Length: 249
Length: 249
Image 1 (cartoon, each protein chain N blue to C red):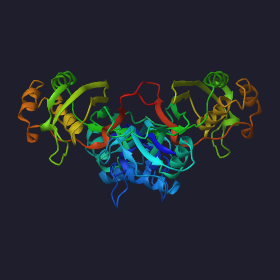
Image 2: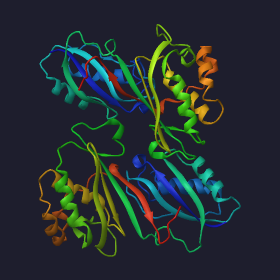
Image 3: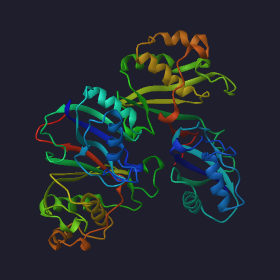
Image 4: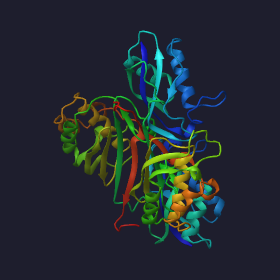
């Protein structure tokens, strides 16, 4: 009994994102319903990241309070039995009462998967963005180099973003993998709304030769969302890891 | 115009297998419907392998005859536009009139993917078999070694199998990958019905210590299906490649 934290994975395809909503299926809603069936003495679930509709997670972190007699291992089994096959608790353990999945997070690692081939592959359609044109990977890597570091990321920020400041530190923006399967690894202390998807959309325009790698420097200076590229679809985006002061698991 | 062949990939999850059936969605049915919408001068589709319900393909090969004016590239685009997102022609080209996708096949490579962890992963649930117990990989590899070669595979054959002979040559049965994602690579000139899935089911029993690796020798000799392990579910099975006398693509 007390506070628990868990590592959660989900296939975001059939969820309307993380945040609980009255009429649609969300990950927070699914876990909250499962918890309520286990005990009425369980608090609301708190997630580290409110992932958008269609975004996947391999390492979301949550916490909740529970006053009953079940152990962490029993809670894990119970929750997995009561929630759909597209979400699972991978780990569950007791935590200090002061632990907070969102406030204590020090950084996050996202991965954005691309299927860069003329024809989309049926087995990768749920978890990658299909990019049906040739990409200049070197140009994309050069452009990414200009974006790493501490900057005002206003040009990559959705108009509905409610983050306190657009000034953030992007510690990693790396393009890895072998065509046709490519992956962006994106790491930072915090992110603005749609930031990763707009970074990817802008770098894809560099890859197609529609922007130069060096134009990224000016783009950041405009601080103007209309100057950046499109916000690409969510299906390639994966929340891979949430980091805390101390390493969990 | 004339004969065409194509390389086809599909996510088998939402198909009732390859073979056309009147009331359910099948891959052959999906492609036949799409072809008929392109031209009434297109023959039936012939596939190299009649994969079972739920089995995936990365390298199925088909052929068909078409007497109109569209090129192979146009047929590929048209078919992909007209069929669901869970099936795609990856390549399409003209072929000799004598080419037959099934009769000319000289061998096939299958891959069977396992998710060997206590908890099934939501993002791998459609394409892997979840194996929630510890496996002795060395014992499984030893057992696999006894099965490679030319044998009477009657003990791994479904009672409804209509293959002319149970005597086949299995040229490869290899366990690769890193836990929790493991893969069996299974290659041979021909296969009996449910043979790959029953080989996997039997080797998993070896992995759990319920059979010894050396017991495979006797098992083959019994030629009795009731002596082998269970036929595991199809979702881990992928048709990776069909081989012909000459290398295609």
